[in-house]
Image 1 (cartoon, helix red, strand yellow):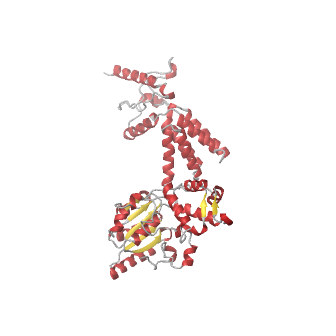
Image 2 (cartoon, one colour):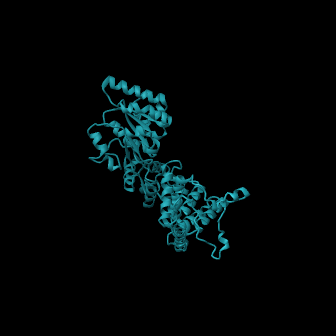
Image 3 (cartoon, rainbow, N blue to C red):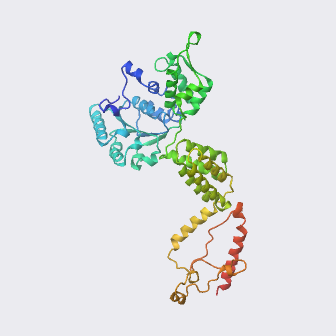
Length: 460
């Protein structure tokens, strides 16, 4: 049961009763499954015994948030759930929804329950687009069962949906469709004479099919949209070759560019930079180049990438290779000079350099430890011998007294203590035995022992 009382532009699931109107709908809409039996993919949710299958079979309802990438079946699943659980559906797009639309949906749900004990689903596409006030408005009605919420989002709900609302809905994670799923959807569209392109007698060459399935990022909508353009713009053959043969060049012209799932402001932005960081930390130059290319292809700001590479140079390479930071800085300057695409090669060079460099997080851990201790001991006075004495009064107060100038000694170093007097010596920095840093490991340990020995000799 689908609402027809909402404004037309807000109702995502209006039935297309007239054949002429249905014929005008895009192929992706015409081929949209109407039952679980037709639905392709998300077996972990729709197979017998799984959650959505059990809900429909037992006509049970609970608020759900469907989270997954574009074209994986969120809207279709919402329609199937609502259509097969004997409930009324009010469908809104969060992009175009305000408080008045939410209140109108609430009034409808109450009226239908009072009149015929009919339950209501409130479908909210792109639910992450609702602001906090709008989500707060939903909360009491979801809580008291005025309606059941069906939310769909491409963004991580834990970032975009308020916690009270999230706690009252079950989050179902939908996966990108695999190649086998997309192939089934493709073949169904090519062969279906009622809703699909069966009457066009179209076939795809092996290269064309492989390219289409691989280049659309698991998005069934992109597959069907591209297929429809390719078929309808390919003339039919003559005689024995009356069908339409869709080759690789036709597919490429129809798709223009592969579908890259990337949102610079969303979770995928953080997922990809995390993958790049971990690939470099794991010393895998091939994976580093792959994730770098993914980010650049998706439109990420190269300057942002350079900043993150600088962080990796200090956090994961550190003093195992002090030139790593210089390499990244040079790559940044090269990009700023040349821009894209020429300057992107310098970023690739820096990423590979970092991946191949010896790794050490000793500096990262040392500075973190030092900051923690400093936050707890920040009121301790600086020892007198470490203070400058620019005035006679300060000198008379003992500022700088007994300070020894290391350069006056043959080795350029003396066993001196530089921590506050009342504070125990802390050893923050523990160099690894790799790379440049390893050359100083024994020297640092030797000097620390010398300072400890001097301290013990001074003890009363």
